[in-house]
Figure 1 (spheres, rainbow, N blue to C red):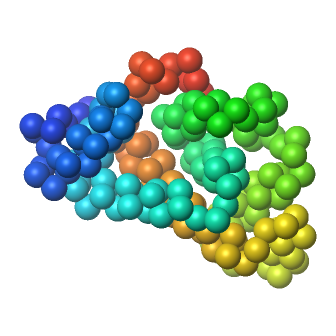
Figure 2 (cartoon, one colour):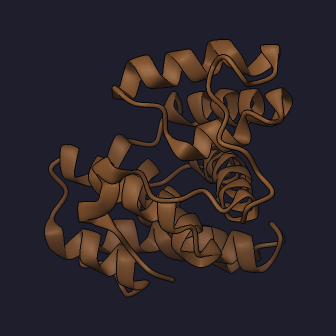
Amino acid sequence: MDLFVEHTPETAPAGSRRAMTAAADRLGYLPAAVARMAASPHTLDGFLRLSGLFEATTLDPLAREVVVMTVATRNGCEVCVALHTAKLGSLGADPALVAALRGRRTLPAPRLEALRLFTLDVLDHAGAVGDERVRAFLAHGYTMTNALEVVLGIGAHTLSTLANRLTGAPLDPPLTPHAWSA
């Protein structure tokens, strides 16, 4: 989409500059998705805060990535899938797990598959997941706290996926090895 500008810290609204600089320092480059989301300091700040809160949940890093990848593939966010494929690689995730997440297929690990299915249930039913589905999730060792943390992850990464698609954020060169197409 040509309507959204890729801001630099110099051209962005003042409220976005600090977050942009922090993202560039952390990653070694300024992601196009951040540069475009910077048009709205509140949206950029909201995503970064929600994402940070989700990263601090009791869900382990691999479980958090299952939630993110489930949201990203469901919403067709090519940037998010590439970015989180790279993150899964840095976590040492099983390539079969990564391929299943990218392909929206059954995961080879039953506990993570229960998490993926629960995430889809929450999305598909706008949170009105029946007791039977919640019990199925809990039966895999998850907690009621984890169920609400899934909601937090869905919220944070729905914001990101929709903003990236709305702004037409392109894939950054460091992520091209992990490209994915909806």
